[in-house]
Image 1 (cartoon, rainbow over the protein chains, first blue to last red):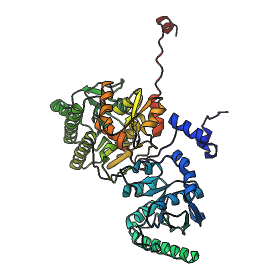
Image 2: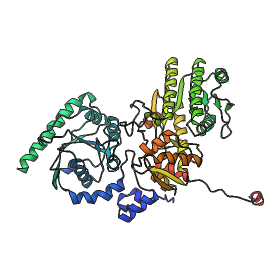
Image 3: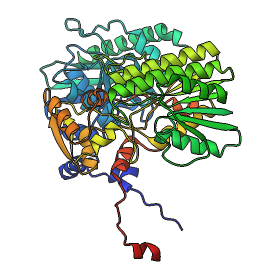
Image 4: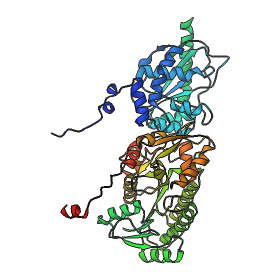
Length: 225
Length: 320
């Protein structure tokens, strides 16, 4: 019989130790993981408890999130500071998968930290690459400071990238006040983008996504009243 | 197939020549380089300076190659100074491509390029794929862009496919590269403000991609990048080195110290340490039918896995 020696923790994530001692030990030995876009999973694990202290989340219809494969999560935002963080936290709690949010600054004081936590600058090539790599990607829509329950136009280029990668598009309503503690994250039904679908259909898919997202927001507003 | 390998004296050229020596479809292999090959093989080798246009042209025309594998792309501070690397690369590329095309039997060109060609300008993609237009921001990146342009023009002239293999930075225990040399220093500088990730590629995986491209040429660029990435801090710790935090003007001192210690840092390596360097290599499998076997962290670990030197007495060696 041949016994194949392997690091069991690498085969089964449940066997991986994530206490402070283990995180520090991995840091010192260099055996931590940083991916090509800069995501540092140990750092994300380390700051996760802090997000629970600051934000209280109500997550609805989280069963619609895929456990495997890529997806483009098109979400609303009002001012845009808390939204990426609460959505990342909601996705991690539901699927234990990292969310890569598009549109972080490429340089500047917060850029390195943002990339360590999963942000990616918004170049279309990076979006394509993320979806090809099977990642969950968060795409924030334009800021709606005065009309938080209005969904603006959805850019066509990211939708075309999702179609090219065969990644479903998931509308997500992220509702809350920037200085408040309570946030609601509501996931909508995924819009399939089969590989056979033409990239030329991006306009149609973008319109359909906008309609679903608007419906989701309006519905959330009614239920909150 | 009659294969001409420029830059055969390097690790990649030597390995490729050895692999082609066992291929029954290969009729003859001719190697040209300024340095002799690292191992013996059955290929015909001529030691020639790439800047010696007349001799290079005469050798190539006499050989009548059907395939050109252009590895005569010299990385600054790998085997030569930046100026010499630039001159040899530019002159050698023009001469080799022109002579090989003019010989009249060429049906494919495979050229060694690198992901430095994409550059790391503000707003540039973090992980560019092959559709992203080259926009180099280092002297080595510009060198590679010139090489690709000359080869593409040669390919258009002869109406043949040109495969540009854009390798991630090549490192390995026996591979001369400025990055590998720097990472093996007792103290390794890292950018304290960002410590961006970079991907690398093992020399054997690069040689495997060259062989695959030679057998199945693709017309266009192909990124060849090991999976995953490492940061400079992480690489230093994997090799039990001391990571030295550097910021802003500190890089000037770090370069100076590294150069005095025998590991000069060219601008593309400094850019890698301060801005990161990765690329999307997900197409290589479908295009060439091969994938890098080692991940970036594995390549870096292997870089540090030098076999210990064992001194044996003459009597002991005879008995063995």
